[in-house]
Amino acid sequence: MPATYEPIATFTFTGAEVNTTFSSIPQTYTDLRLVVSGSAAGGGNSQAYVNGVATSTSYTAQKLWGNGSTASSTYFTTMSGFVPSNGSARGWTSTPNTIVWEFPNYTQTTNFKPCLFYAIESAATGSYILLYYGLYESNSAITSITCGNLSNTMDAGTIATLYGIKAA
Amino acid sequence: MANTYQLIGSTTLSASALTVTFSSIPATYTDLVLRASYRIDAAGAYGSNPYLILNSDTGTNYSSVFLQGNGTSASASTSDGSTLLQMQSADSAGNTANTFTIQEVSFYNYTATGAKSISQFKSSENDSAGNEMHVYASYWAGTAAISTIVADISGSTNFVAGSTFWLYGIKKS
Image (cartoon, rainbow over all chains, first blue to last red; front, side, top):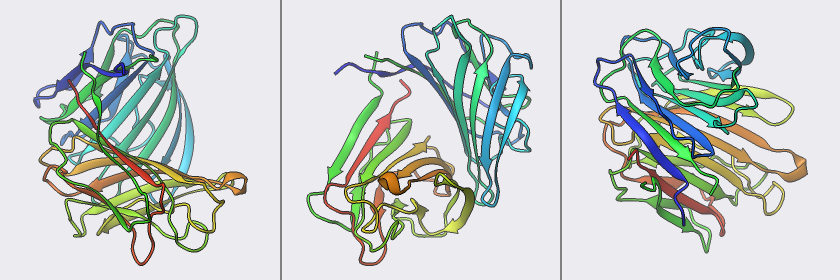
């Protein structure tokens, strides 16, 4: 059976980096899946942006989130990337968080690029779930993705892995 | 290029059972994914709540927040300091016959030396009578690599025959 879920690249943070960039992404898959799991004791918003574009007019997103007592939804017309903690006080902490970004049909050049992403902000008390459907408003194929933190360094041991998913 | 989504083990029940166990889980992957299709024999609709126990830990080390929707309303709830990892309501005797709950549980960076981040997506189907969907952010305070996962139900309830559990390992390279 052919392998259809393949690692393109992985990066383990050493404690000195704010972000990492996966560049020269092969255009041979159907979808991309990016998983970042780890922590940042200094806090800061989690983020991913594509093709080196981090301007607020390039991304929009619809958010559904819950904190255990409240569930709500918000639409963001300006984002500087796919930022799961946008519009909230949430973000990286010293406890383990996991952010997953899914980029379907990332090689097409005729439409904007959707992204389904979600943040699992785990803690002994006060965990959060944030679900997003976002849009990168460009017809360009995705060739690079930068991920990590908007401001502070990620803790050593945080792992970022980019996977490619093939239709066959 | 390496195949990174590998089946570690699977179990399809030929008879009803109280528990399903995956043990001696290799520490050679980046993440684990448990996929399950199951139904329980509790009375009523969504009659009982299965759960997971990691590494036989029954201390107050599990926390979860979840979103729930059933087509007409949405809600959120939390379970902090629990002695088990909630999987929430499952299809049972009062639900439409032959409908099974499907669930995916991801254990990220499961060999890390700190606490573990866990996500869950679940749909309990009830055919035209209505469905339930849950999304979870979960936390386990255990600092050891996850080596054993037990799916369990309290009381005299069982997973019914035909319930299937798959455990996958995902490698980063």
